[in-house]
Image (cartoon, rainbow, N blue to C red; front, side, top):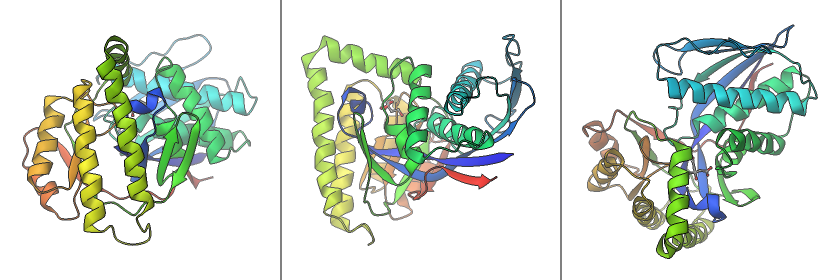
Length: 338
Ligand code: MEV
């Protein structure tokens, strides 16, 4: 059996605009998805996800197309989860030139599904890593990022950038602009994450922005403005000492850009009342800045605050179901057991 894990991520800035070739800066966080894979002696795939929801599920499927899940959890989320595991299995089979390989797969994740923290990218990256290792064909983090991108691209009908998959494969803070993906230096920023308990539909949200952008020149300008904001943010990060505690000036400037980014995303229609309420609760508690993270529509916000104030305020915010501090994760995908 091989066990691999991969981190989730928050976007410091740049989600959505990155789909149209603008730069984005996601940061891997210490909340991981862990995927265990064992090769079977037939070509079937059995997926168990004990904690993907309260009740978890097990599903077995194979060449005859049977085995759809029979579970009492949100069908959409289960189907989405299976689609990502399926796509990861296909990529692993293809990479190892083992089209008939079968697997027992167990997914455990501390990253809420569809909430903007890169749960699908983490499951796909860790799944491809564990499965290819099981087949004696380990891949580099860059190859994993490429394979995982192809898997996400297929499941999301071509509406995916390389940002989530690259960030969770290599870890740390990264910069993604089209096909150009690289790690960048960044200090350990004091991220606080608020989760409304919900999830957004990435495909629909990306499609909504695409329509707005095609219909209105000012929506296209808004997307470009996010790109300008990210470029400015990158220059701010480049001037910071990555080994030192972030200075007040750095946090104030990054926070200001996060606030601005949230406003632009709101204008593009991807925020929600719960996300806005959490963003405002964080700002009023004295956070340097706050914004939604990921596709939006529901899920998580990320704020910058080195004090306990934002965490406390979010704990007492009706819309917020969970709140936690998120450390920057220096490791991307990692073998836990081989
Ligand atoms: C989703 O986590 C981030 C989006 O920018 C889509 C993508 O980059 O694939 C909305």
